[in-house]
Length: 271
Image (cartoon, rainbow, N blue to C red; front, side):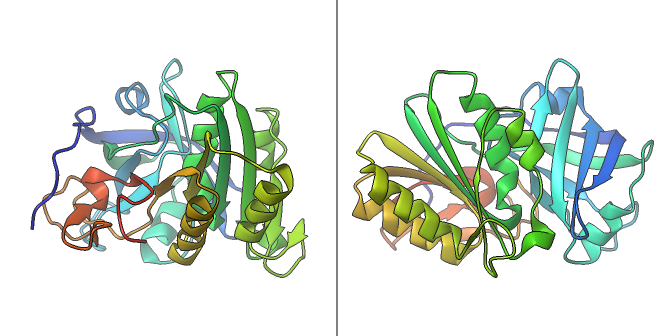
């Protein structure tokens, strides 16, 4: 397997870190704040941490989670997690004062150097890296539009954190129980069409694969540029096990999501 050379991210650290806040956002999503100054000072939007779910080797593999927010001055990071299986169920039991085993920050994050207008689109827990990204973008004179899709009203969360950034997201739900009914991709497409969005606008997306494929189609159709954060299973998080390989766009090579991503530009990998 061949991969192109990529810029090396900051060297990750590993350790035991104390949980300082744990909050349930709804019945499925919870947020953990962890005191981890050495990770917080290096983290950038789109990067992730690899977390050991429990104090034993059952389950064996670490779980990857996007960094939701980081504060290098206060020395903490936050994770927003959806409880979907045994690993996340164990993490949901963490309480203030408990220790959590983390490796991070890992991976390549979003590139915001040349962005003037940003459209952010998240699906479900895919909102996690986008809130961090929105906060960093808000530090500069850039236009930011945020779209977030959930299955239903019961999943809707984190709107208050966006409100604190003076961002009013367009929220969609599959069943129409909150916000606009339908997929978030439809809301993004209508916005681009109605506003006659031109090239120079960058689309950032994170969510399930079908959503990313549709966002990629939108980017191509309207001749925009895009960056996509992929959600895949990762074992090691550092490119050693090669368990997260995805086909490159040319179909003849591979990229490792944990090391070369998780953020890729459009036409960099095959979605």
